[in-house]
Each structure stands twice: as C-alpha cells, then as structure tokens.
Amino acid sequence: MKIIILIQILINENKLNQIIFYHTFNNFIESIIVNGIEMNLIDYNITFNESGIFDIEIIFNKNLISLDNLFYYCQSLEEVNLSGLISHEVISAANMFKGCKDLKKVILDNFKAEKLIDISNMFSGCENLSEINIDAFKYDKLKDIYGLFFNCYKLEQINFGQFNTKNVINMSKLFSGCISLKEINLIDAINFKTEKVIDMSYMFQNCKNLENLNLKNFDTSEVIYMNNMFDSCEKLETVELNNFDTKNVENMYFMFANCISLTSLNLNNFDTSNVIDMFAMFKNCEKLGLLDIISFNTSLVTDMGEMFMNCNNLTNINLSNFDVRNVDNMFGMFQNCSALTSLNLSNFETDELIDANYFLANCENLEILDLRKFSTLKLRNYDEFFNGTDNQVKFYYNSNIFKINISEEWESVDINE
Image (cartoon, rainbow, N blue to C red):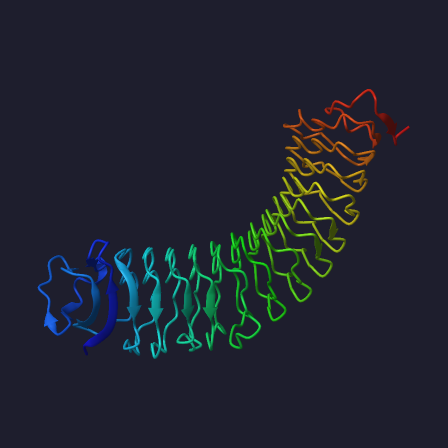
C-alpha cells in the first residue's frame, strides 16, 4: 500500500533553495511531484529555481510507520502546511523538523496519525517559530514528547487545544530553551495529563522570561527525574508546588538553580525519601528569602554540593531534620550565603564526607555556628572550608573536627568538655 503526503511549503529567496530528504527515506520515495510536475530526483534532493509557495506530493512505495527526520535540518523552509497528511500507521515523527531554524509557521490542521507514539524533538531547534497549534495531536497513544519545543527561541504562544498526554512517559526538555515564553497555560489544556510521566528533567529550563506558571493540575506521582526542572527561569518569582507528589523522585539536582527572581519557596509537602542527588538544588537563588524544607528526608542523599551556593538573601534556614550520614560531597554548600547570621548544623553527622571545600566560604555575617557532630575523618578537600568568613563566630564543635583551621578570634566551644 502506497502512502501519499501532501504538503505546502514556502521557500525563501535569500536561502539555499534545496530540500534534502534524510537518508532513511531514500529507499521508500517513489516520486515527488511539485506544483504538478514530477521532479527528477538526484540523491533525493529537491532544488528550487525560485522562491515562493510550492505544493508538494510525496509518494512512498510502502506504508511508512515513521516520519522521523523527514525535514531534518532543512534550513530553507519557512512555512510548512501538513494539513493533508493522513497516515493511519505512522507511530513516530521524532526530529521531523529538527534544526529547521528559519521555520516560522507549521500548519497541522487535520493532521491525522492516530497511532503516533513518539514526537520527541519534533520542532527542536526551530529558532524562528513564534506560535504553533498542536491540537492535531489529540490521540492518546503518545508516550514520548522529549524536547518537543527545545530551543524554540522565538516561540511566544502554544495552542494546546486537545493535545493529549494521557500516556506520555517522557516530558524532559519539553519547553527547555523557550526564552520568549512568558506564560504557559496548562490549566486550560484539558488533555494535558502527567499521571504516567517518569521524566520531567529540564522541562522548563532556560525559560528565562517565564513569569507565570500554574502547575496545580500536575500529577507527579510517577516522576523519578526532576533535575533542572526550573533551572534558569530567571523571571519566575513564585511557583506553587503544593500538589506535587515527589515520593518516587531520585534526582533533584539544579531543580531551582538560577531562579534569580524567586523570593519564597514552600516545599513542606515534598517527600524526598528516595532522592539521591541534591547538588546545586537552590544555587544562585539570590533573592530567595524564605525557604521551607523542614519536611525533607535526606537519608539517601549522597551529594549536597553547592546546594545553597549564592543564596545571599537567605537569613535563616532550618535543617534540623537533615540526615547527612550518606553525604560525601558538600563542596560550597553554603558558599556566599552572606546574609546568614546563624547556622545550626548540630545534627550533621558527616562520617562519609570527602569534599567540604568552600563549605562556608564568604558567609561574612555568620555569628553562630553549631557543628557539634561534624566529623572530618574522611575529608580530603577542606582547605578553603571557611575561606572569607573572617568575622567573629561563636563556634560549637567536637574533637572529631581536627583537620579544619579555625580562626583564633572565634569563641570556640568544645561540647566534649
């Protein structure tokens, strides 16, 4: 059974007027008809002698199940109309327009592919795409939408319509790099479901102009990866995550890193009992003044390096519930937390700790520090533990701290005496 794809494209006169079909289609293309004229194919390339709008009929010699890479890096494309594309057997359209950096418009009206499973990276790198309607993806077979809009730098509006994610497992990098998006309306996207999603890593990373984000409809009960989820959302001031179920999450590194406008964060509902990695979780949250993580269970965490680095507006943080017995990396954990006046780490048992360089570097307003259970027995990197913290500090310690140089000006209290 043959399959016929009817499309309409716009070729810009200032670009290389050529379409090169990805090599995987070479054995399947029977003929290509452009504006009613059958083309003489050379290496499965189409060369246009002039700019303009072209109606293209692509005839394949068998019923395809994949449209992967069909227009991969066709950088001359500006507009594509896929309204006539009907394929009941296609299950994948991954990378279909990846790298089409001049693509400004894609029309998907009546696009029918009921068995479509994978549209990962479909529009990845479409740097000039400003708006898109994905209502056509309304069938519930989709499982992978990884990087769907990755680095769509000019994308300002997404019309979700009936976009159906009921069975999607992978949403990693979904909106990553969409630096022009100011709002993502997922509340009105009635079929945008997340109950089966495992991977939300990098989902909103580098959405630098995102101001509003309502995720109250998110079901995160199956999610394992949340690392870099909001990384570099530089204009995001608040984000409500009260409904987040994080019991299965293992990775939270860089989750809120570089959210430089975030002023408060209540994560009291977070279940972190399975989290292993919290590296740089709040790094560079320089306006964060209120952080509630009292419920955190950190018994499995091994990496807390740079966790609060450059949180220079944080005056107080309650870590009394932290279990750090498995942590081996605390490099720069509180570095440049210049507003901290007291830090009670009396519960920190650090028998496995290897790297604590710059642990409290440049905490220039610190007045009280309690490390009474802190151990340096396995420490290898520690020379700059207190680098730049030259102020007078009342310091509680124990005899297991034998590797760290303490300022003579400090009022030191050995709790073993």
